[in-house]
Image (cartoon, rainbow, N blue to C red; front, top):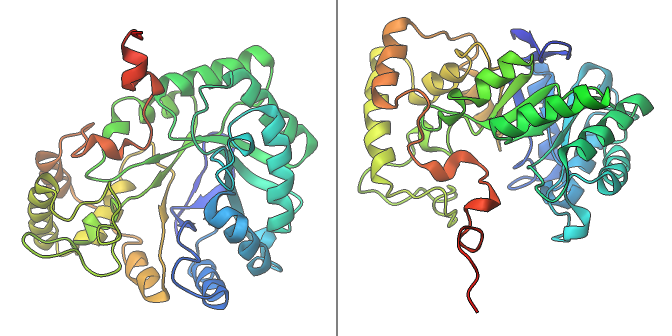
Length: 337
């Protein structure tokens, strides 16, 4: 599998990474272990997880699975979302980061984390405090690189300025939702990452299953799909996405590809994208996803895709992943007694 450097100074990572949010959702730990080994055997060396995934259970499972293969893996995890629903076990404060990293290291059964990412922006904590805490972990040898997840461009710039001001190590990467249906990061996040030499890890490249073609006009959501589970961000009756996926399916057929193959290959066409994270639940799904490996799209196909979803646009803005708290109603209006 093709490799690319993560940012200006990071490790070489496979263009497709293994995302583990659903690793234990529908299979036993033994089957999950087989799936991880299958991904590694296929050439994937980037594994991305988070402390909050099943409240630490996924990190713990990975610690068991990676025994004996740890030195061949670029292991990324995240901190920041509330563990066990406890707000005191969340955020980007030095207090929590210093505790959380030791918890993750213990669960992962490793001495270091290759990429430690703040899972979501934390408006309660100055970005300087977060950058300084990550820098301290780098100096202590507990992490190799730090990164962000779903940061808006202004916070990416602030984090870089904070590192320069403090003489600290800057964030090496950003992780953002990116797919044909979710192109908002092309406006500013990707250009900012390129300007500062940051890598970009793309998540949800199939937009919750929409770009597999599983949701069809007039048909109920397939059993076991995100829409069937009641996920408010994935509605099988979304007219705009139905229109888009029908048009995109026709483009894929013209190119001799499945919609899924075209959609995954498309995410890697942007020069600012380092890797795309896949989230298979079964070995069969992994095989299907990896069928996109090595596919490049010609100019005609790329132009046709742009005509369906314009560069920099969201078909559904709710898929952006994070919104400033200042947009909330109680922050936009004066309080009345």
